[in-house]
Image (cartoon, rainbow, N blue to C red):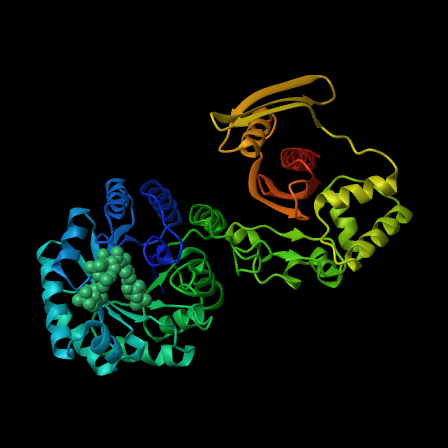
Length: 491
Ligand SMILES: CC(=O)SCCNC(=O)CCNC(=O)[C@H](O)C(C)(C)COP(=O)(O)OP(=O)(O)OC[C@H]1O[C@@H](n2cnc3c(N)ncnc32)[C@H](O)[C@@H]1OP(=O)(O)O
Ligand SMILES: CC(=O)C(=O)O
């Protein structure tokens, strides 16, 4: 059976405290969501602001395949704003719980019903698809919900939605509630779950078992408070664990996750299911040994299925097979004695509570093998100019393959570090397509002469490396880290 995916990253997701997207950010995300194959994009809440309307209008003009929707309250002014943005549909939200009706709206149930039905009629008169949605439905009288939905159908509502606004459902209650609503309302039923108790994905899947045919979800589970049910979790669980189908192209999940993370400036926790960087990462020796023999031993699905990748991390818990596997991947040949020496050093590092980055491993290998591993690209010159009356600018001269090829480039940036890294990336653009995925900086010590530790994560295709470098000069530390990462990716 097929389940529709209603993505609310650009509406409920953008309600994440501190997050605000520009109209062009919204358009970029909407295009990716459309490529991903979601059925509905809730592009925002048109009444919110001029910029919000601008963003929604950019999306509706784009001619995407997905239905474009705006959140509206049961108010003509909200519906007018949605109509102005030329959306296909409205997510028309009506608070239904006693607490919302009494304290928030200061109305009676009858008054709420009357306002809601008038709003549905008004939206239908303006040619909109209407999803009539009950806010705080899971703390509402189920008979009132059924009455609202059935009356809503009479005046033209096309779908209904049950919102677990404060995330208090359990999987059992969810299945029962959605069964009751589906049996008593002859319209497609949507589920909208929040994650206050970490149950949003489970509750959403149970709602589908109960009869819901459309799931409201957000990329990375972003949203109010603890967030919404996450798209990647719901789609993967429904597909793999429950055997449902969706229109989502699952192999694009990681890519869309990272776009949303970058534009919302919300890092994806490493242990996030499906799209986290640790979702398919393994350090424990016993696990890696199993994986080498058959990946199914410790992976429920293949990482490529969701656009993620397998990572073998070396550390305190590693075994020799993991080390050998990693060295093979790096094209480094060692004898048994050298392997054991590198292995012991990794354990020593781990016991000191240290994280072993790819660059650390390379340093250990260099030490044990007693020889330099070839640096394909070397930094020769670096010049950076910055000040209060100049856009920061940097130029670099690099040597590629010894002295054979010289790469010289200049670039601007928002600051001197950005300019320097842009110059390096520009210079190597003809050699390799390397993307800077993450840049973090920490001062070790307190003064202006503190040691600066820079950590970068670089990607070339599906290969990712992490490097950390420390220097009193933040620009040197940054450029050295990026150069080392590029060399690792080219090795
Ligand atoms: C559970 C959810 O996610 S609900 C969606 C939350 N989304 C948002 O709030 C979108 C962003 N919001 C905004 O930009 C602003 O709140 C606006 C433009 C919508 C409204 O701003 P203001 O007019 O200043 O109102 P304010 O936000 O202070 O209060 C909300 C009003 O809407 C009313 N209201 C709330 N929900 C509904 C509803 N579904 N239908 C009708 N009225 C509603 C409230 O009762 C309150 O009315 P009151 O002023 O008569 O008490
Ligand atoms: C409508 C909505 O976002 C909610 O009730 O959570």
